[in-house]
Length: 155
Image (cartoon, rainbow, N blue to C red; front, side, top):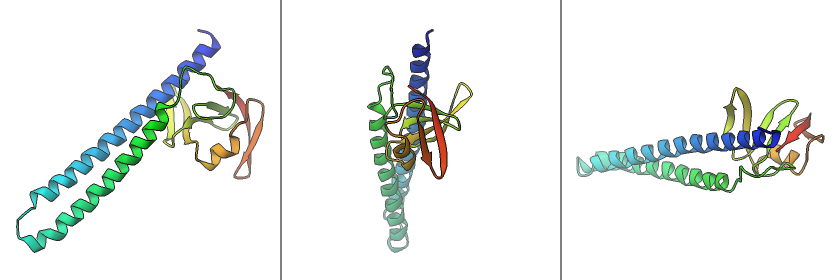
């Protein structure tokens, strides 16, 4: 396996892991939303006044989970735009960035992801950290929160 193939394989695995994590979050939000709806439905008609506020609380919770699900669906659409078969030459959407201090995957904000025992931080293209390194390539430096980072490689 040549270097480019290995790099693209790593990018594919990172993308898969992000999608897996997001799918789990979406499933959890959907289940929580359905549970809240079910609770609201179960208490229909019983001692009207007492349960009216309970039902409203369930609806508010359901709406909160529905919004969360919408955000996750939007996040997923960003991931779907990443082409794991294309190598990035500079820091942009879909890039894997290795620095002296940390490794990053530019896509969506999901925190730390481990692939083959190596840690990567999945960050969004909206984040201040991304903005600090955007457009830079291997060998260049960027500064974020008073720390200087050297980019070792981008793919």
